[in-house]
Length: 148
Image (cartoon, rainbow, N blue to C red; front, side, top):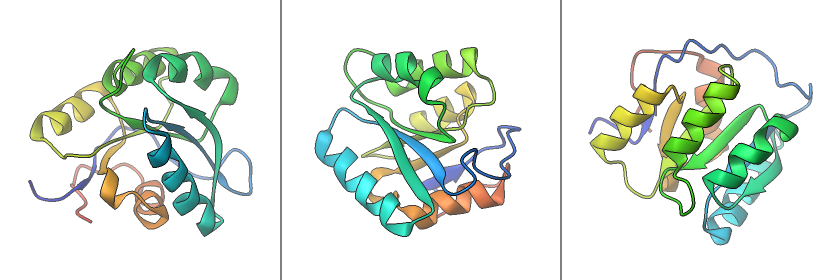
């Protein structure tokens, strides 16, 4: 695989966060430790604010409409409902939603699924940080993979 941070042309543009101050993030992962670490890494930067967390795709689908985050960072493999299915449902309800999928491994099948369902990017969990997320949001839609 060319890289572990992959962007896709989702046709979704990104200009300014809704809050005007920082980018609001919803973290969805079945591992509380990962959510804690991701929150700390992203919020330390000051440009990101984790406004909600969910432990599985089912909770994410039920929460995302009321939370209305700028970006959803979603694990692919979770119990109750996978990140792939949750992303499909979120985008069905809100086609403009920006979902970044993540996983411990960067399997080629994941990359195909991410592109197919309309997520804006895939980031391997070990590469998730404020800089990698900012590069996705600042760059806007792209057909070229971005390696980190």
